[in-house]
Amino acid sequence: MSALLHIERHESVLLITLDRPKANAIDSTTSLALYQAFADFEADPSLQVAILTGGGERFFSAGWDLNAAQEGEAVDADHGPGGFAGLTEFFSLTKPVIAAVNGMAVGGGFELALSCDMIVAADHAQFFLPEAQIGIAPDSGGVFRLPARLPRAIAMEMMLTGKRLDAKSAAHYGLVNRVVPPDQLLPTALELAASITRSAPLAQRAIKELVKVGESHPIDQAFQVQRSGTLPNYGQMLTSEDAREGGNAFAEGREPLWTGK
Image 1 (cartoon, helix red, strand yellow):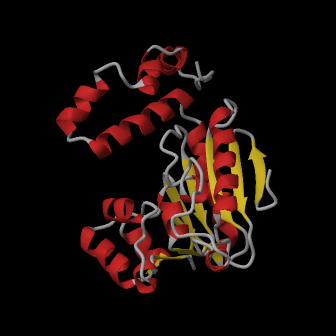
Image 2 (cartoon, helix red, strand yellow):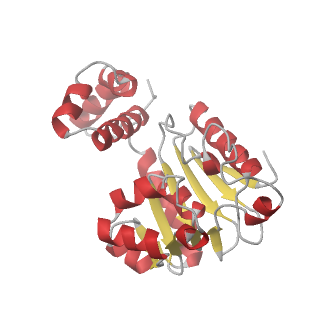
C-alpha cells in the first residue's frame, strides 16, 4: 500500500490510518490511495468493517491540500472513482466504515468523516467547514450530508460561518457515536467494529443498502423498492444460509456461525 497510508488487519476489521504530516491533508494522489484501500476492503470477503483514522493527535484531516493547490492542482481535480478522499463518492461500498476522529476534521476532512457510517471522536476533536471563508462551497458531500445529520439551522450556520463543533456538542446532536479520551479512541473504535462483526455479514450489507433507499425515497416508495426484487444485497440475505442459521441458533440457544453465504 501507499506510504501515505498504514494498513492493519484486526481479524475481520481493517484499520486504515491516513498519515501525511503535519495535517493529513488530501491531494489527488492521496484520494486514489484511499480509494484503493477501500476497494480492496470491499473485495475481501474475510473483512467486514473498516476503521479510518488519522496519524497523530492534532488532525484527523485538514481536508484539501492547499500546498497541492499552490502547485497547480485545481479545485475540481480528478480524485478518482471514489471522489475526494476516495470515499465521499464511493456509493457502491457495501460494508460499514467507522471514522475514528483523532483531532480536527476540517473541510474535506470533515466531509470524509461524514461519508463514514459511524464516528468515534477523541474528546478534543473539532469539526468544521471553513470553505465559504475562502470563497468555495463544501461540495465533497458536506452540503448534502451535514443537513441530514444535524438540525438544518445548525448545519447551515456551520457551512455559512465556519462555526466549529466540538466533540461534546457533536455527541449532543447525534453526529458521533462515542466521545472518549485520545488514548481510548482506537480501542473504542475496534470494540465498536467487533460488535458489528458479531452480526451476519449479509445482513450488514442489506441494512446499508436499505438505509440508502430510505434516504433517497419517501417511505411508501422505499417499501416498493424493497419489495421490487432489485436490491441485490437484500435479496441475497433473504435466501441465505446465514438467515436460516440465525433462526436455528436462536432456537437452539447457541451463538450463530456466520458463513457469509
